[in-house]
Amino acid sequence: MVAISRSDIREAILDELADVEGVDRGDIDGAVGGVGGDEMYELESKTAEAVLAGVSARFGVPLPGPADLAPEQFATVDALVTLVVEKLAAGPEGDVA
Image (cartoon, rainbow, N blue to C red):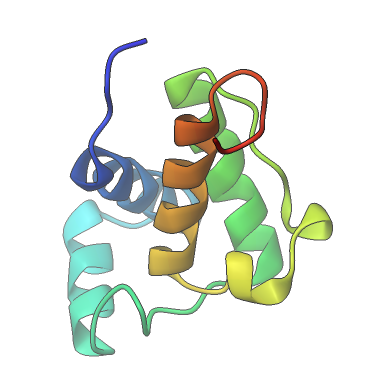
């Protein structure tokens, strides 16, 4: 598997978020910046679920949905980035070493 950087994951999440919200990527960038960054931009569970599905397809790795997670694991853009980073680091076994 090719290494995927945290930055690449963030970009994929923001791209998927723009698709889910039906807006231009620049609008998402502005909204995230307008609330103080990735740690402050909050997501509804249905939005997070759709974003995770898109990222899962993009990177070819199964990701849990919000129903399988504690709210703090998907509530912000930063939380989603961390979730995907951890899942990719865990590899196909699913357990982080």
